[in-house]
Length: 221
Image (cartoon, rainbow, N blue to C red):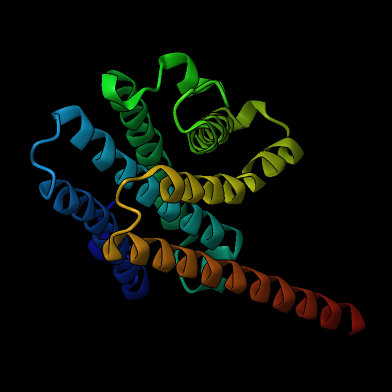
């Protein structure tokens, strides 16, 4: 996909999303630099956690833009769909790396079993369970997309509706288990991603209401 062939609003959104992901990566590396004595796996788990969260937020954002018909026709729906799929894949890959590095870091206290079974971790039981449920939910959502031709439309819509819950669980997991939660940068990351998604959902509702009014006006003719 040639980004320069996209409409100006979509190019701006694309570059903003790339900047957002780069920012999440830099935030994690910047904070990790203050703990240079920590093992590489500790760094990797933190960095991949930030990247996974950022990619998930962008995946949900572009998913909302798809359901709102490309922001009410302002953006190319096909291009937004491509971006949604790429960010979903990025979120899955980064989440797998996050799980592997957390389990691989012996001092984390999180076993492979606890990484896939909620409440099985003896360390940070609740916070780890939030991440486990979010990870499983993300995998289910991604799998339903890749197997969309074999999944009934109603079931597919229901599964994708879980994305908002996965996003909230991922945020709560990061806040309650992340050692960077106290940093101003991490707090602003959560605030800005939450505000952006709230704005996207509001836009989705407004577009749906506008469609409803148009449909009523058409029937009244």
